Image (cartoon, rainbow, N blue to C red; front, top):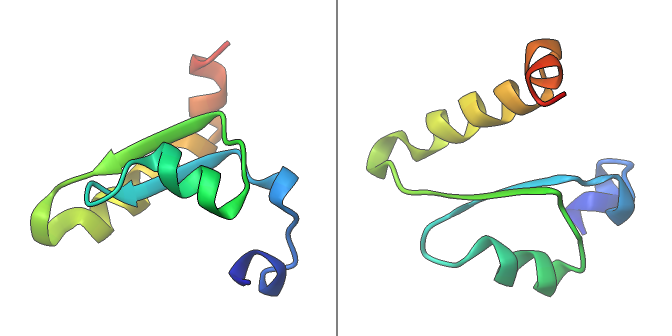
Length: 68
């Protein structure tokens, strides 16, 4: 599984971004993770770029300050 290939455990994953073709909760349940942040992305051809921008915003220090 990609999680293991990346050297992670399922418990280390706290966010999930997926295509709007499926719901994030379905994917999380299927792969056995319990993320605190989930979102479906539907930006047509820009979905990849939008997913990266969202992921960066969720892990950046400024995002951490805003959530407190």
